[in-house]
Image (cartoon, rainbow, N blue to C red; front, side, top):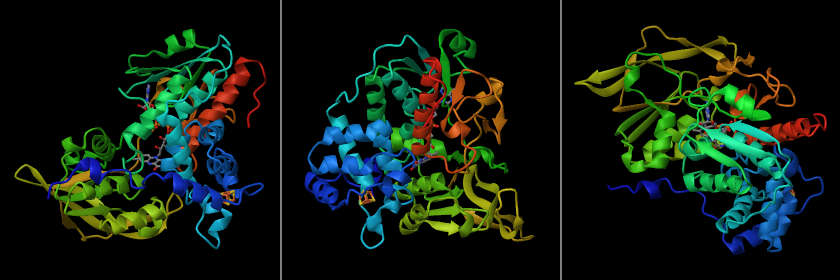
Length: 440
Ligand SMILES: Cc1cc2nc3c(=O)[nH]c(=O)nc-3n(C[C@H](O)[C@H](O)[C@H](O)COP(=O)(O)OP(=O)(O)OC[C@H]3O[C@@H](n4cnc5c(N)ncnc54)[C@H](O)[C@@H]3O)c2cc1C
Ligand code: SF4
């Protein structure tokens, strides 16, 4: 069977038609003190943007979304809406909740299709801000500051801007073009984006401190850590696997029998790619049980329907090689013991329970390493992440941080990165214009 990778990984939810958007928007009760708005981490005025769709004012609707969240187009696609706005919709109790994510995407796609300038920046303040990292946190902060008239330069180490929205989120949820359209909108606000510029590499912090009035670090996290087993060098990094599937899926070699190590959302994305691009059997291996897995419940349901198998309470021991090729993953069965530091029951080995899962490709998706710039810049850290105060300022005055690189509690997500960037921009603006450090 010949698989067209573009079609196999095409966005899973089709865009709403005009008719569907009007019908869906007219179902909304336009609640006062709307619970959906309260449930959104960026507090988008959801009934207001939906009302504007119902009256055909799509640019006005996009403007309402962007007022609260400059990453509104990405969030429309990738937010776990079941857990957030749609989960809180009053209609959910007896009927289907309003499809808030799809309506948001409808308005944002309309706005970006026309390359429209939605906001005009305030008059120049003469202040300069450097942002390191162009993921949701960096772009949100940069855009908010540019709207307030500041001169902002984003320094990004990769060739393309957009962070994990561009490189890391599976195309089924967010194609690369959607992420890049958002980057363009930030550029149109007057933000300069310099790619190939790595803080701590070819970009020096002292240069930034001399040349800019404030610095915002939005460098995310690092690559996937080692599994620390024999044959490590034959295990593929899950983030790279996803990246290749987005950049050039034809160049991604997918095995016949693929084992994915991990059971979080990234692992599910890797398993989905393998399955959709032709693997006959995909097995996810996790050392704890189904109850402790970190993937969203709806993602778990989705991947089971894709036909992916699970091996819970299973710990990888070594990569098995035959004639120089990967032929399996030797594992050990586990049982759950007393809770560990994370509060979850600790997996304990069952002696003598070794077994081999046949595989010709092994992919690891077991989280990301901590942000390395923290040490480099001598910033205080907390659980490996950059420590910030309530105004997103680090232990060094004038250096702020947000997004995954500061996330100690709660799930790292696009919308939380966008909210951090927005709030940090407000704090930086207040500091640079001597308005105290009020935030909200
Ligand atoms: C596989 C995967 C799937 C995900 N799916 C979802 C999802 O469906 N929904 C959701 O809400 N969230 C999802 N997330 C989480 C979400 O993508 C992140 O929480 C979000 O991107 C964090 O934004 P950020 O700006 O903090 O970091 P990032 O998006 O990681 O961006 C950081 C940027 O900084 C750059 N950078 C790093 N170091 C330097 C340096 N020294 N100098 C200059 N630039 C640097 C990086 O190249 C990158 O572009 C997913 C994450 C992964 C890994
Ligand atoms: S809770 Fe549901 S019905 Fe009420 S405003 Fe929000 S989307 Fe509309």
